[in-house]
Structures are given as structure tokens and as C-alpha cells.
Picture 1 (cartoon, rainbow, N blue to C red):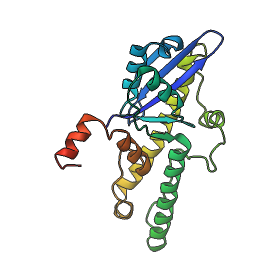
Picture 2: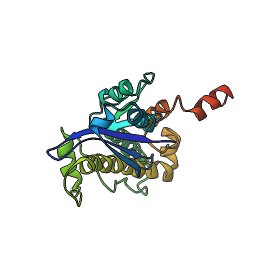
Picture 3: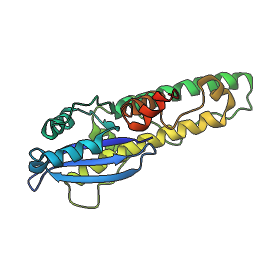
Picture 4: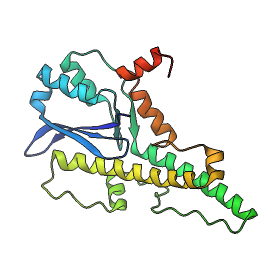
Length: 219
């Protein structure tokens, strides 16, 4: 599984750049590129490289937009791709839905067997979710990056939030794995929550390996 990308056009008093980060399905940062905006938006080779680095990955962010990657496609002169995105609030809402369903099922089991341990989460997801990304950062108590604000600092905050969200799903998946009656009702958990995993898979649809699997009748 390839994973996600975070893509920002960052303009400050000191810089004007396009910043791209890769984040894998475990929430770990696996690559980073910062390109001057003048180069990214005028040089076909630079734009093409950035587009290729985004290809087959899920665009993720608090409110992701395809405008920037499509602008890069236009500069690169490449055929438009079918991009897939996932908003972090949607991923968190889905995980909360799964958690509520699990809690309800555990309560039903405990009504029949008081020996069953109540289900508690290591870290709760706020419900309702914060209205803004900044409010969500405050909820998670992220420390500011240890360097001057800029392209890397802003994108890294998004990547931290992606990782935090992945960790909440991983905690949920542990409960599903450890309690057979939950696994029986909801199925074995994937590496990401169901709709999130589906979005990552859709983003990979044009990857050569996926095309080969379809041709071979395995997908």
C-alpha cells in the first residue's frame, strides 16, 4: 500500500514554495520535497516530477483541494489524473462511528455477562469535532516545530495530525482484534478505517501493480 501525500503552496515574507510530504499508511513521514514556486509553476520538468510524486497516493488534509495538483499537471503538460482525497475530519468521524458501534456491542455483551471488561479508549476523539484545523491542533496538544515557521513547519503539523488520526484507528483495531464478538460482527479490521482504506485503494487504481492484478483476475 502506497499511502498519502500532503501538498501545500506556502507563501510567507521569506519564501514562496510548493511543499510536498509523503505519509505512509502507518502515519509515518517517508519523504519530503520543497520546490520554489516560480520553478514549480513554470518549469515543466519540475512540475512533472512533483505530479509523479503525488501519483497513486491519496491527497489528505483538513480540507484537501485538488486545485494545486491540477495546476501542476497543467504546467507539466501531463494528462489529467483522477485524484482522490480524504479530509481528516471525515476520517475521524468514521473512526468515531466505529467506536460508538463497538461500545454499544460491548454494553450488550456485558448485559449478559458482567465479567466482560468495559471498553475504554486510550485517547478519545472529540465529539463534536473541532471546527478548524487550528482547534484540532490545540486539542491534540501538539508542540510547535522546533524551527522557524515556514513551509516545512506548516506541512509537518498536517502530517502530525494524519499520524494522530492513524493512531486512533490503530487503537480501535486492537479492540476489534482482541474481542471475537466484535470481530464477528464488524469483520477483521484493515490497516485504516473502511472508507479511508477504500479511498487509498482508489487512489492506487492506476498504479502498474494494480493494473496487473486486474488483468490477472486477482482484483
